[in-house]
Amino acid sequence: MARNSAIPPESFEEILAWLDPDREVAATMYVQLRHDLAKIFKWRGCSDAEELTDEVFDRVAKKVHQVRPTYEGDPRYYFRAVANNLVKENLKKVKTRVSLDDAELAEPIATKDEEDHRLDMQECLKSCLPKLSRENRKLIVAYYAKEKRAKIDNRTELAQQLGIPVETLRVKVHRIRLSLQQCIERCLELKANRK
Amino acid sequence: MKEEPITDALLREFLLGKLADDECERLETLFLTDFQTKERVAVVEQDLIEDYLENGLTKEDRKRFLLRYAQTDEEQRKLRITESIRDWAAMEARTPQPAAASVSDWDRLRARLRLNPIFVVPIAAIVLIATVLAIVWLNTQIEQRKHLAIEQELAQLNSPMSLRESPSQMISFDLRPVTARSVEPTPGLSSRAEIRLVELHLPWIRREHYSIYQAEVRRIGNNESFTIRNLPADSGDQNVIRIRLPKHILIRGQYQIYLSGITNNGSLSSPEEYSFVVSN
Figure: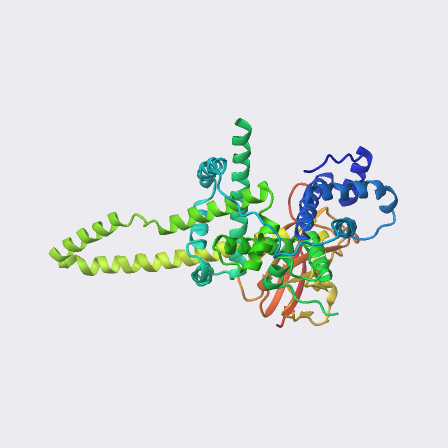
């Protein structure tokens, strides 16, 4: 579980000013950086990515007054270095990595609660779909029309029809899917709060 | 040590935790600081999720995937959201479109034509003209969509936030205004295969300076031009405006750039012209 990070307000302001002179841009960068660092911890197999992300910001907050005046370059490299140290510390603490063969990994199982969630999700999906433009809706349907081996040919054909490289198509669909996912997440949160 | 180019296969190994620590550190740093790498990682991650949902991962990769993407409630919820979007789209694709009504209309029309063959030639001519017009219209739409997508990409690449980043696979060139270059030859650039972005440094030699600028990029011999709005002056050197162009829009030929300052009332100053040649 994520613990509460208590960064003193003046250090928080200095971190923001370090990220970018424009406070709005800095706030966006701050949120993005937290999200990205949590992902990195997760990729490195750290079990509590959120807690470690808090720890990165706590450590930077303690040093920011000293480091910032002389630091040159993108401050995100500094955060990255602090995160890297934490990954190493975390590995030492854990001492042994569990072999993949021994790891007991939970597959998502459908319980009764999960079935309720699934129904909520379908309702949310239905309410979010009309927010997509007709063109984007058609594109996402065409993109996911085929599975497994057939999908590669299908997507190559689709990209040709649109006159764009497959890479661009994948990014385009990723952006549409992301907006749909964010809408569904907001809707699910609202539903959960109402219960 | 020579760095491995960033491919989808490499990113996939990275996401499954199969790379050595130093390679992970390189990719993680790029992920943090380079928007395009971040987006590529997200796309490859999405492919991985699709493969998992289609049971297309090997036993080992499936374990690695579950370890990273299906442990917390939030991760499992994200997987289910992707699954529901995919399932809905696949179902929509399988649902036959309401074509029955138009088929029967067509049958009725054919039946009428059989009775009145005199209409066949004029109707065929109308259908032919309509088809040609539809093709022309469709091509225009595709071109417009492509143009819009490129302008969106340019806006993204040249936003103040993106310009602060130093992406990998980018080369930079200094250009001089045509008026200041006198008899020098037009500078040329031949971009290598691994390059994704070209950054051009445009010195602003006028006395008046502006807080934002607008650049119009066009290839000589082509009517199409791309406009990049709200370009800031370089934070280090206020006399230089930087623009970034993705390599895939640059084809062999000579390019012109018209750079104008945007005044406080929103009008454009007279433009400064720059040119360069692409010879890849």
